[in-house]
Image (cartoon, rainbow, N blue to C red; front, side, top):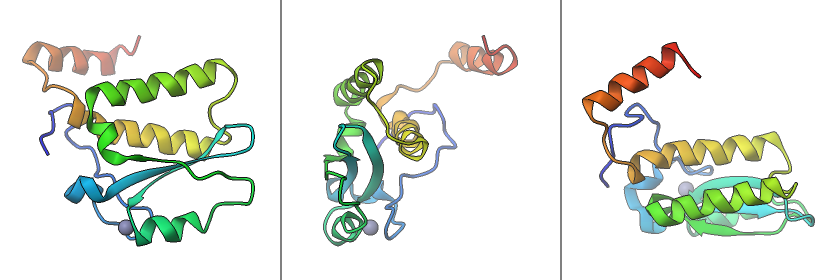
Length: 137
Ligand SMILES: [Zn+2]
């Protein structure tokens, strides 16, 4: 799958069970998104569909509910943004993530998928990006 040159050093999204690069076969890849009784996200777990999904599902606590998305949804520009907006809306309503680990896992997923939905940068944009490292705000 084609990637932009934004974040060109980004790591692959790996299966949390077997460690496989999930972009090798996107159609067989998914993201478990578990929630608790208060609908807070408790886990964000990229994995292979099938056996790896089943094994990881066994680690859910009694009060966790199983949910999932195709990893491919996070490489679709419309669905990518739609999912982030949905999570931001939940956070605004005081919901969102139950724990820091799930929040960090979600951010990691978004960052790693971003090169697949973004365009490559112009030289002017690359220069602006370099300058932003010197002057963050
Ligand atoms: Zn796997």
